[in-house]
Image (cartoon, rainbow, N blue to C red; front, top):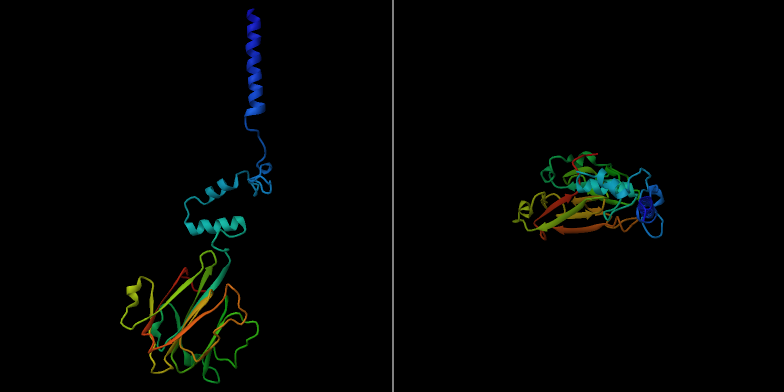
Length: 261
C-alpha cells in the first residue's frame, strides 16, 4: 500500500471514530427543562428554571443549616410537606389558673381573677387557634367558636398565661402528669413545671385541656369539654382530678419558642 493511501485510511478511521463517538456514544446537550425526572415526563429536573438540577440546588442552598431549617426550606420549595406538616404559622396559648401566682413560670403574665371579674363575679376564658379572651362576660357566644372555654369564680386565685409563635413543621406537644405529692417534677427531667392546687379556696379539682393550639391547667366551675366545631386536628383532650386523687401536676410543652406575641 502506498504511503498516501495509508494516511488517508488512518484519517478516515479517526474521522469515523470521532463521528461515531459524538453521534452515538457521548451525552447530548439539551436544556435541563427538556429532561424529565421520571418516565412519565411530568416534571423537569429543573422545575424552577434556574439552570441547576433541583436536588443539587436544594443541597447547595441548605448547606450548613440545622435540620428544622432544611425541612422548612424543602417545604417552601416543594409547596407541600415532607412528613412534618406545612410551615403554616399559628399561636399556642398556655393558661394556668392556680390559687396563687407561684404555680406560674416567671415569664408568664399573671393577674388576679378579681381584677378580671365581670358583673356576675365570674371570669371567662376563650382560647382558639389564633386568639384568646380573658375577663368578664354576659355569657359565652357559642356561635362558630372552634376552641375551648372555661368559667372561674373571681375569688379563686390567679390567671396566668403566655402566647407563643409556632408552626406545623414542628408543632407544640404538651405532656401533663398527675403525680403523688412526694414526687418532685425535677426528677422527671428538665423542663417540667410544678402545679399544686389547694382545696382551701376552691372545689379542689384540677382541670386539664390539651389541644393542638393550647394548654389549660387549673381551676374552673364550668367548661366546654368538647369542641363546638371539632376537626381531627383540633380535638380536645380533657381530664380532671381532685386533690384527694392526685397530689400535684407536672407539665411541660415542647417545640415552643421564647417569643411572646
